[in-house]
Image 1: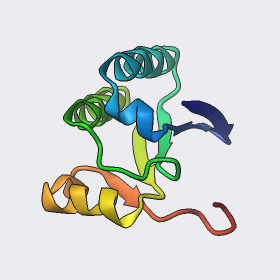
Image 2: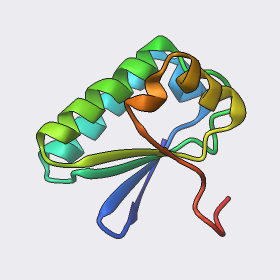
Image 3: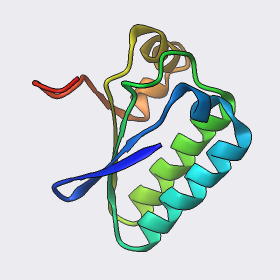
Image 4: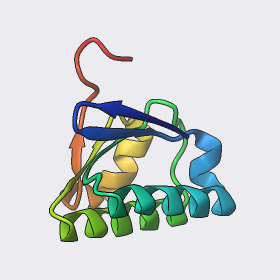
Length: 108
C-alpha cells in the first residue's frame, strides 16, 4: 500500500494482493486508524492498482473507516475504480454509502 499526501488529504493506493489478504488488511486498518487518530480526516482511496473484486474484509474495512472518519468530521473518497470493482459497489448498493469518483484529470 502506498500512502501519499495530496493537499490536506491522504491518498491510499492499495494493490490486488492487499485487498484480498486478511493479515494485510489488518495492518492497513491499523495504519489508517492511526492516521485518523493523529488528526488526518480527509482520505482518498485510489483503486488504480486494484483489478479484482474486493474481499468482504476489505469492504468491511472501508465501511468502518468511513464511519470513523465521519465521527471525526472527515471524509472518505473512493476513486479510480475499474468496471469490475465499480459493479461490485453498485450491485451491493454500497455506491450509495460512499463518495465514489472517477480518476482526476491528468492522472493515471
